[in-house]
Length: 191
Ligand code: GLN
Image (cartoon, rainbow, N blue to C red; front, side, top):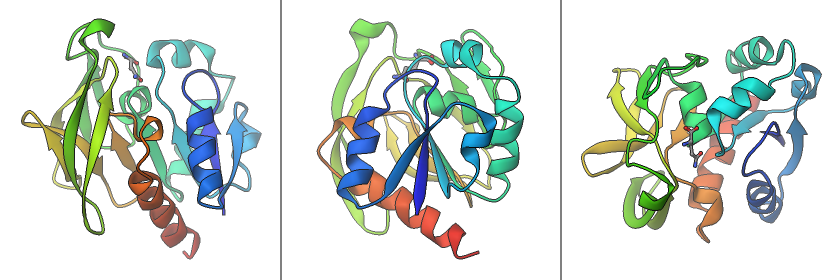
């Protein structure tokens, strides 16, 4: 199994360390052809507006094609890119999950926080979730399942193929979310 990390900008290395600890190969994805031969893609946290500006020609349409067969996990800025609709302010997104999100919904960088979170993965797990100038998921359609909530808002959601977290599991010691995504990628690789 090989997992690509979208390498336009943002928090890539901590994901690579987590997947290496799970024995999963990683590569960076910058150009459309980098998606060839990978089984899943992580769109990391960072600054979604910068990623939109930094995208190489044809990248988003290649990511859209990839998403039809393979899982994508969007973390924070990556969750914003996956969404159907984005506001505060509105910006382009890939519409790969039926969620609507509000950017920077908790306030400025200084309003970033850490809090306990219960997640319903293959088992119930408790983690300390790190929210860094995070978005809020405001609307979730029926094809999207909520795996964790904070303050009444979903913070971890999945569709049949894709996964989104508004917090940063790569910055916490727990392996649970990386294991969960690896499992999802494995199921789709089997066809
Ligand atoms: N505020 C960023 C954005 O709007 C997301 C922050 C993050 O990824 N930690 O894209």
